[in-house]
Amino acid sequence: MNQRISVRAIINQDDRILLVRRATGRESILGLNELPGGRLDYGEQPEDTLRRYLHEDVGLHISKAELFDVVTYIDRDDRNIQYAVIAYTVFLAGGHHEPKLSDNYDEFTWQSLTSIQQNSITDLTQLLLGIVHQEQLTDTSIEHVMISDENIATTSDAIIYADGGSRGNPGPSASGYVVLDNNQQVLAQGGEYLGITTNNQAEYQGVRLGLEKALELGLKRIEFRLDSMLVVNQMNGVYTIKNRELWPIHERIRDLVTKFEQVSFRHVPRELNQLADGEVNRALDARREEDHLV
Image (cartoon, rainbow, N blue to C red; front, top):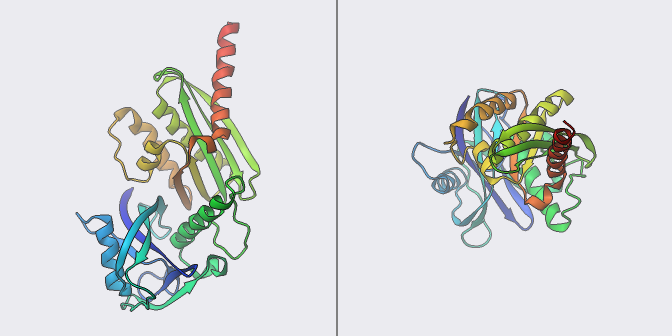
């Protein structure tokens, strides 16, 4: 699978987000709205790419850009390409701004999140705006992160919390996962004892277990939430994998990812990953009890 990197700008003005409508490109995105941005050129830095696209395509200039999130995305038109999408919250120079569009776009609009219709935006924009919406809900109540408005683009069929742990590193290890639907109801959960391995290998195995269960459940669009920043950044293509022991499980996961329409990876604090952590500890404790009985 080939990997490409692109950037997108989240520009919020008066609680409305800037969207631009495609006038060029492949048939599946023509006439659909998206967040401004595009692919990195070879050797180009992400923020330079962001400034270039905003200047050339929408005639806007950046005052400040803050990293919002990094997600992976598989283009349904070419499933051999995985994108690492770097999203920025962008603050524009000066006051009110009127975009000046290039030939790539034929219309712009400022829309509130709750007014955006799912069938009017690209798949990638659905993913990113869904994350924006979830972040806003998290700020209000971290225990009730869910999308309830039918008009807003949902980012996934389910959320999977995954974790792994090693008592010794390396030592006795296990992985666990919990699959939740968009109403925060548990669809599946489980854990698996792995034997003697490392924390990082156990974390990756948790992702593998979650993907296999999601495939079994027939889910198509899933979002992982992990407390391992290393695994999140490696899966999103931000970091390369230098540890050869992780290569086989990473390749297994990449193969599983191709069987879904959309898979994203997000980092959460450890205290928000207690469900999956509980599955890890249950698997480890069960194995310890079995060993004591032998």
